[in-house]
Length: 188
Image (spheres, helix red, strand yellow):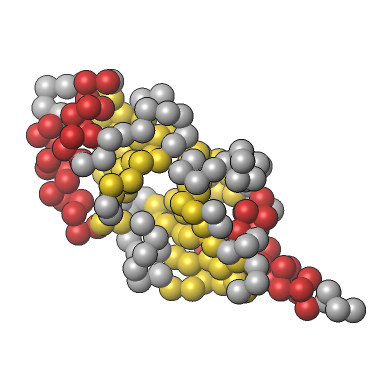
């Protein structure tokens, strides 16, 4: 996840960069243990049973968002076939499966100051010991609700609503601009 047709939006090499990620297929799945097992088998990713964790298998990811709720991310080209396979696997089981592919966009914030940049608008402690690689949660970035996922030591993925994307990028751009300005003034 995070590879592909990413176009730089803003940033500095020294601090962090923000890139918009390629479009993905996205599903919100809710269900009981029997449905969870069926989705995991059909989706090809064992859905994480632990709170605020993500699981990966190839190009697919499952993020635990709540006691019975997961965000499923996969290549956009696979979304239609995946929806069919999941519907078949869930036949007769109580569940909710909603295609939210067009609701969000993905952003990646990466670099040595990625956590610091995010913390300018996010109240979560992003220290690696507290929010390790593979952890994910719903939170805020400024006034925008996001799903935040630490995909690497200095890499975070943000899922943000289409209508808040420009706001989120603008907030991060402003923070990174301040980093760059501070770096330019460090010799004075």
